Image 1 (cartoon, rainbow, N blue to C red):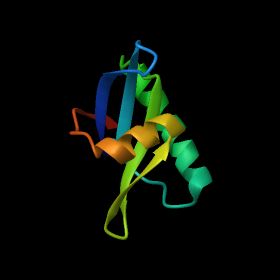
Image 2 (image 1 turned 30 degrees about the vertical axis):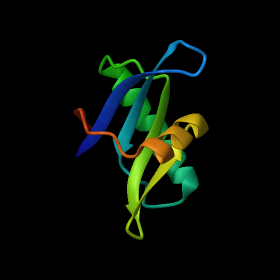
Image 3 (image 1 turned 60 degrees about the horizontal axis):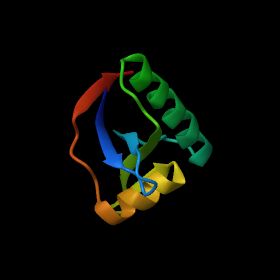
Image 4 (image 1 turned 90 degrees about the horizontal axis):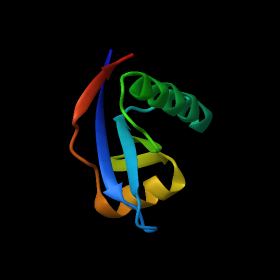
Length: 91
């Protein structure tokens, strides 16, 4: 199965850079399932050569985009919105 992924680099509030990945995926189970899925997808992205400091899942729930993942990244995405998909990975 192919998963859409956005891999982006943004300046952090401390002045450095943060590389992050947002995956178009959601676990069919609970938040603990989302945690396991996020860990699996993050590891897969790193194995394929992408630098990932923070990561999150993005999914549609009741007609709204929801984010699950690193708290600071989720807060950023909640303000800026869903990024454009830049890659796909096979899982």
